[in-house]
Image (cartoon, rainbow, N blue to C red):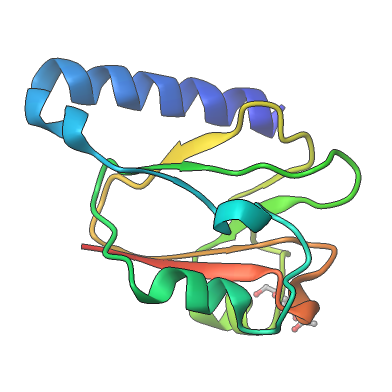
Length: 129
Ligand SMILES: *[C@@H]1O[C@H](CO)[C@@H](O)[C@H](O)[C@H]1NC(C)=O
């Protein structure tokens, strides 16, 4: 359910961005984790390293690819929840990845993790400029 709702929001967002801000079509698309995608990190700081050389902007698109039942994708609002891998107040937890793409509409820091492997470093924070 969360997944269906999320995709609706995302698609609506992308369409509105195209209609109102044609220049936004230049927004960058990323796959979380690059070639590794969204999975157990090969080294503990893998996702942090992945973000290091990148500068993210509003309306960039992020594709999240993982195998169903092997991982999840959750967003939390607080750094504390992110640091402690606490999904109690997660905005959503997606367990079926089919076609999952998100956009971050406002400048700020966003926190994501896999509820199954967060403590093993399967987490990423994105600073949107
Ligand atoms: C997780 O977060 C909730 C809500 O903030 C809090 O009540 C709970 O104690 C936290 N759990 C742990 C294990 O820290």
